[in-house]
Length: 448
Image 1 (cartoon, helix red, strand yellow):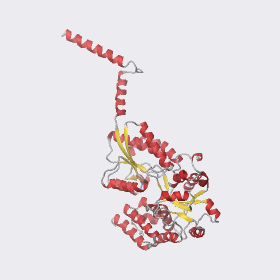
Image 2 (cartoon, helix red, strand yellow):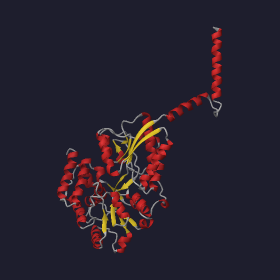
Image 3 (cartoon, one colour):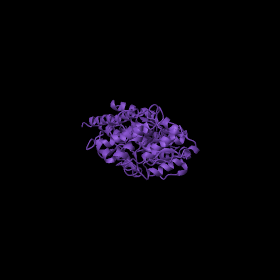
Image 4 (cartoon, one colour):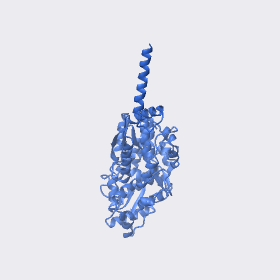
């Protein structure tokens, strides 16, 4: 028995000796700390697979910046294996809605506030990010008031906005207008007069790219209709509670847009080019004006010369006579954000939180602003790092009221009806018939 005990003692001493030798190259510390460190290192190298869908595919500064953020995240988190699907903007929503219908959402995905957030929540496709926001209180407090409103359902927040998007800005080329004696239009009649003058000079008055159908809805009718009807009417019509899209005021808004087209405001084939091609037209001086969202800034900055950028100005849509809406306003929404699939949990969820913070946290917000993209976050603008046009628009949007964008409040069916209806309208369709189609679609979707 004594011999057996002695053998055990020798074994323990030898094991201790080898343990000490193996730790000779360390910086010291207790055995407990070393063991803890080894365990932590083991956790760090465990691979977590995470899928990400986004639409930052273009050559504009914002898209390039976000792709750089993603690449930097990969380098800093070697244990997180990202499966990235970069889908062009025009097809992104359709792809996302397709996988949503099949309940096969990616782990993290770019999504929109308002209708999309509510519908994905209703389909149990999302999980809130309250835990992430509350763990980064300084980040959460840095967002502007109301930033989370359109991402909030039943008191839970489902995303953090990665930008702020005014959707209806009248961009103009100062040189073209001045050369032909045209003032920046402040009223609807002045706009029609400008169109007539420019047309007589064989100049395209307003570039339009409505191939994907959403552009005219988001950038023109959302603000134009608000000028005519007022915001309260639209909120009621969207809810089908005290207002209908067949009401005379909305039909009048459709008639004003159709009248603009009939006056020759847009180039031929406006339904056959997309918004990026439209922005290129304007950037290259092929049109005097363009009605587009704040997202155009990154494309214009990337594709227009410094001299051309100096020639560009920005303002809101003109005043509509006898309109009930606020003329000093633009339709707009907080920008896209990253949604988190309801199926993500455990280590995968921790990795997803890191990715969401990397792409929409304070550093990413600052980089986004400097890429000529407006944000809904408190960051002081360094005007030396942005174009003069961006600085002008930055001042403008901080001076005007924000009104709703149609596709942020309507149902998907109602939005499709507006998008398709405006395409039909601009091709000569009957405004009252189109208004009826929109009314039917929204009422049916809401079961009213």
